Amino acid sequence: MKAKEIYTEIDIDASAEKVWDVLADFKEYPKWNPFIINVSGKFEKGAILSMTLKIPHHKEIEFQPQITKVDNKSEFRMVGKKSLGGMGLIEGEHVFRLKKSGNSKTSFYQIEFFKGFFLAMIWGKISYDTQVAFERMNEALKKRCEH
Image 1: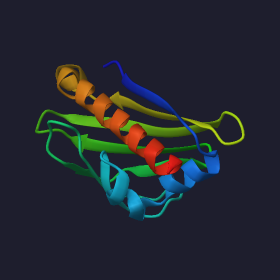
Image 2: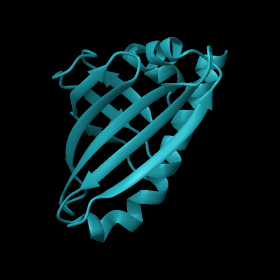
Image 3: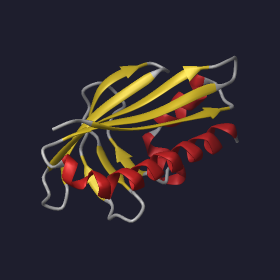
Image 4: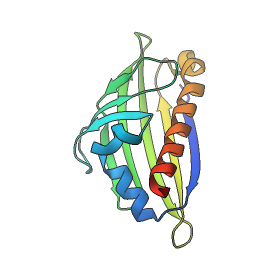
């Protein structure tokens, strides 16, 4: 049962503070985020979120991840578990990481570490579309922060 990873990154012409503020403002996600289309809950370590995801070519996914780490203006992580269509339980640790690169530039990283008993069987069905969803969110975040 080997873990799998999806990794994306994008450079944003905005301060880490601005990018962080956009990421932390869950109420605004439906207005700009094509991947995480709805989220509610507190932006703090230990909070359980209620989240709806939209991955291309898949039904919307609802789940309740728990925020496991909040490092102000640099990183937050959440862990969620989901049964995917009766094909087994999948667990994912989602990471949003920001790195300052100059006075008003930020490198944004979005990473997910997947594990689960049936992961090998469904990886081919979810990996590409999930990568696309991450990249779409990255582009939307860039647009939101730069304008």
